Image 1 (cartoon, rainbow, N blue to C red):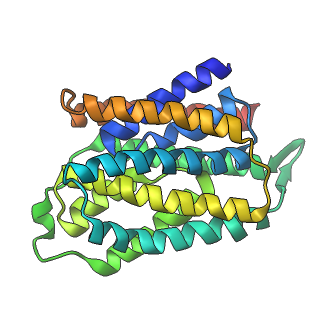
Image 2 (tube, rainbow, N blue to C red):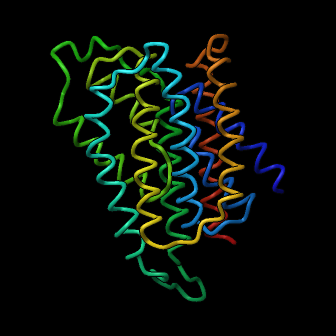
Length: 263
């Protein structure tokens, strides 16, 4: 199962390199269901894996002139504040048991995975629907209040489920800023890197034990996948890939929901 987990880390990296988002959706399920980690720990590990992998991809995209740093930092500021406090205060504050119905106990771990499944279903809908509007839609200039608001929302989601939120960031950069798609993907990687690693620092501050050998090895394989994805993007239609991946994420979201309620 460990070999399978590390192989899937490469797949996650490839997806992140191709789409600038979406790959992080795979990380938590791999860590929870393949490597058998606790969901709270898995979301923390996901922040480090996705953040580090995105640093590599973001620097590569920046060298190619496909990152708008000013806009990226504007979006990242509220996101990193939200993700840090979500990991440092909200997640530890959540009770271990939320409610019971008969013999069924709805625990924090189940709650995190169910919320994650809901996020996956939303991401799947966004990717399957496709049709991100053109940068012409933002011809009147960037909508700064909406950029700050969405940055904060993405930060909370990232903090709760450990997903980078690229499926929210890329459309926001295109629609609210008028950014070309290629630059939106590159800028998304920078934003994901900043807020994910800040969120992981929130976990370090909470005193959770980290299995560094497992975490670093998983991250190394995801970085390998990132380089493969950046190379393949020249030959693959991102729009078709996004729709195909959307159907896969939809299936995974349904499976996770059923697993948590029927297990």
